[in-house]
Image (tube, rainbow, N blue to C red; front, side):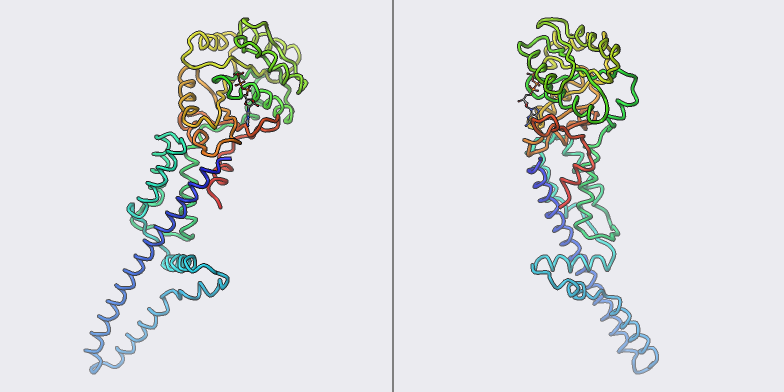
Length: 384
Ligand SMILES: Nc1nc2c(ncn2[C@@H]2O[C@H](COP(=O)(O)OP(=O)(O)OP(=O)(O)O)[C@@H](O)[C@H]2O)c(=O)[nH]1
């Protein structure tokens, strides 16, 4: 899942780390030069004074010994890791060790310019929404660039932490716990699913019914897709497989009436959740959008969940925005994440809609539904 994105983020991490280490090395070299200059100035003034004042020359010698002691013993850091095979990586460690010893790394915007430009192109080519890319880059810049930063970690983890924080800030939007919401709401809880044709709405409803059952909640399925021939049969098969009650009307019936009947059934039979399918539609199809409005009026659902496929990338992001504008959504399920390498929709949808991604569909089986966990996803994407 999202392997292409992980690879791109990994490339940014190593490029940025390299740039930061180069900057640290330069700063060290400058400081070493400055110290050498200062020492030779002391030595010159000392040789001028030496004939006159013996004790003072001792003091200078002592001071010099102290300076030498204060210098970090570079090789000892490497000696403690004799296994280090790769010369370039041991050079990296040595420079990091120097930066540690001094307790600071100074990162200029220039140091990050190239890695950030590469990251921008990589994210855009992976279908991450442009405004989301801008926000990620801005957050990394704000985090890393400074006149002088004191660090107690390696440059690698500095970059990794900045990247994690930046991704989390765009992915983790309005997150709420779906099961908690179900548990706390008055029963039956009515959840309506919407989105375009063929993205996996009906399959996701079946998966969610199974997920709810796994967590102790009963559910009834309602087929509000009275538009498409074959829709009843498709959802009926899921209901049969899962041994769930299905409420359905004839093709061409009123979807609001179907969902209403399902709510009545749930009330009469102490069912916790009504999962209402609707016809696949574009936000621009006026008659179908007015059906959604009628469902809103008639049954006043507790949640409207937008479903789209992760593999659709930027198209899914655009549709999420448009659906949210047309009929306010409470969250998103992104299906087919198992087939998506780029992760553009997963990174962008929450930020663009201001509503959380609730679940990822990760396969065709009923158990292939994962609660969307921003921290875990970001850690998986960023950490080695
Ligand atoms: N690999 C994979 N396939 C999925 C996933 N979710 C759904 N599918 C498949 O996507 C196809 C379409 O799913 P449906 O549930 O029929 O889609 P829909 O949005 O209800 O379609 P309409 O009823 O036509 O609007 C099916 O073959 C599903 O098995 C997923 O998370 N991963």
